[in-house]
Amino acid sequence: MPLHADTVIRNAYLQDRDAVLDIGIVDGRIAEIADPGRIDGDEEIDAAANLVSPGFVDCHKHVDRAFAAAGERRPSGVDGPFADRPMNELFDEHYENASLAEIEANAVRAIEQAVAAGATHIRSHVGVDHVVGTETMVASLDAKQRTAEIVDLQLVPAAFGGITADGADAAVREAVELGLSAVDDEAEILVGGVDPATRNDDVPGTIAAWFDVATDYGIDIDVHVQDNGTLGHHTLDRLVEETRSRGYEGRVTASHCFSLAEASPERLESLLEAFTDVDLKAVTCYNSIRASMPVREIVESGVRLGHGTDNTRDFVIPSGTADTLEGLGVLSQKLLGADRTSQSYRWSETNAGIDLLWDLATHRGASVLGVEDQYGVKEGAVADLVVFDEPSRQWAVIERAERSYVLKRGEVVAEDGEIRPEYSAAA
Ligand SMILES: [Zn+2]
Image (spheres, rainbow, N blue to C red):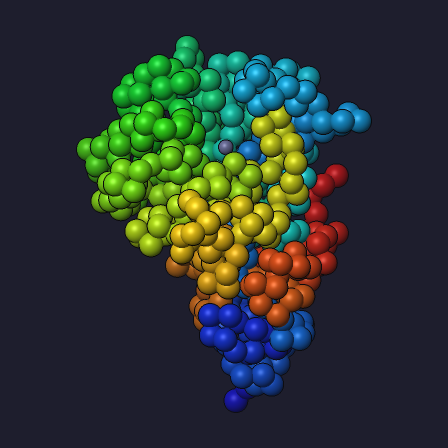
């Protein structure tokens, strides 16, 4: 007997199965995947043999800073080169001038932008410390609540001046408590941090402070490790050691890890071995990743690596549209590998290379966020899906395909790149 579904997506090309099939959705979940014509539904979407994929997992954003550089004729705060910009001061000034309602509205806009581009899961860091206070967390939590129907959002409060600075630890703890009291699922709140050497000149003290917060509240960790070269390697080694000594295997993510792109083959091997030893996860973002980042080697080592857009139009990254597909297109052209004579040169532009990048932005990202059980185009999974207007991942990346439909828990929340009005929280 044919299944009667709430919604059926007809003629969906599922790349892992290399087949065109129908997807029946009941109560927000994928109830059945079958040959075309065997499922009928109250709502019908025809994918016309184009790609249907699980939604993008955007593992790294900063929704509390969204659109901080916007509003003037030209983006503000980006007049000098990156290294000359006093980032924390720029953000302090931004937060001082913006009301809580404005920060919240910008966060909602950033979330909706990402969802319209196909993201169904987002992890966002939130800057809190003694200068900014925890209002950014209040605004981000309100934005999270207002967009709960269209996205799963994790929030990671972090002190970007360094957690050992005066008052910062207390602010982070207050933000974590605000978060935990606002969510049903405590896995949606993590603790973050940034470069313990350059922010606080105290690598062991800073890392210990992150783990103290995490273990006191029983939450996971996602920290920025942006320092280059051997300083970055040292920080990663210490993070691995602390993960092991605290019994936090599989619960820590290191974002960016630029120094992995600068390691000798031997050093890279030892670092990746250490990562896999304690299941330390990593996240990379297309705009800041180094062209020599050994993405393929990282993935092949077994390290769980996810991708984030980091697009929030702030003073750090003023450009981009929170579009994972744009990110994959840039990544495919940017990851050149070491040299032109090696096998890995421009591997990211091969069909297999794009498959791997797509995996970072979907299944591997879901694994980093700890949502992989409910995720994917499989029977029983939550129907978080994107229907593209191109026939494969490769053409979707190359053509920057239209996101014809974005489904969250089986409901079409965005169509042709726009949030459906009934699902928009933007005032
Ligand atoms: Zn960041």
